[in-house]
Length: 69
Image (cartoon, rainbow, N blue to C red; front, side, top):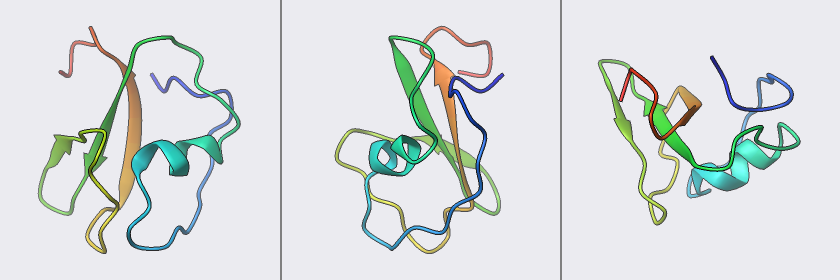
């Protein structure tokens, strides 16, 4: 399901953009990816300018045509 080469758990500072967080997992395995940020109650698609806040618990990297989107 994930479109990264290595699945990791990382603690990142507040204010980091999702792409920088995902780069810690080495690289994405697909060309056209979407960052799905999961909050405690529900998730949303992160825009390029969105930043990680203290309620973000996970970032899923999915292809833009994935069935969850």
